[in-house]
Length: 338
Image (cartoon, rainbow, N blue to C red; front, side, top):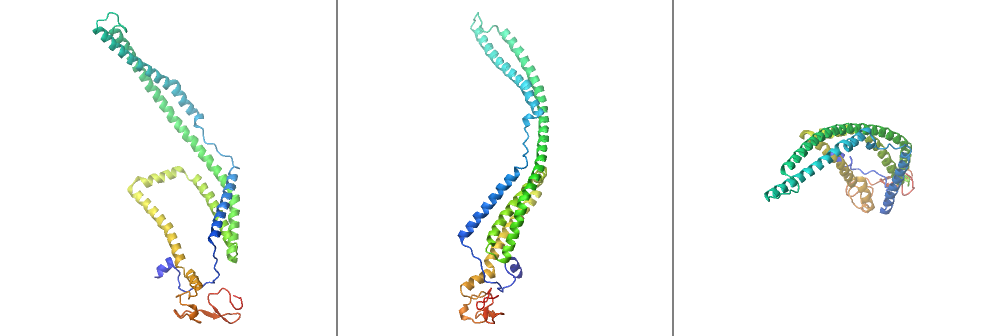
């Protein structure tokens, strides 16, 4: 029972509180939510304007790299013309075969005048074209090998250009974060100070200051997360993912981590809801509004100084006017003092 009380409830069944309870209608809560969204959007707009102060880093144009131009020239001047030549030779060889078939039919029909010439002439043309095709295929293999080597060089050049871009973008993001901090750090500190003061004084502006603090916290968290994401090496993330997905053991560890996160997040939410539902202070307030003892729900109009159901002390002497008052009252109903 003690462990359950520590986890899900209060450590004591005694109800000690001042009855001053703040209740907000649903419409007010909706307006506060809308105000939080509006303040956050204004902060977002401010951060975007601040980002424009630092010049953006243009993404590298790979087509302008000398290595990429060499690849394009190699294809246009060496590889593609040879492919066109091979296609022409293959088309001519198909035509020669058709001509040879026609010549054979003419020979069978004992035609004196041949449309395409004698079979021997056609076969000699076919042999010449076949040798030319083999020579072109050999040239294509050499040209494509050279082209592939240029492609690999271009890939390395792309990686270097992308690495330079990421490095420059990291430092740009650091500068952006420094400029953004000039906005969200004072905003967050002022909101935190205002909310702390309002809560301590139980001011009517407490809920407004809470809304402002939430907006400032979201903006500051966003700025920090963007900075961390830009500075975390992508290779490290890829390596971690490879390690996690490499073996069954590491995947099981990853599942344990995810299960732990789910239990932590959802468990915290369940504990929070359970505490709100079983909080003796909230329950006691509800029972008092119904005219009952905050501990056992025994009617107060049937009790005097002590509860007739549980025997708890209900009234005590006021230190100012010496008259009886309920133990949970924030101020005495007789003299108006604490």
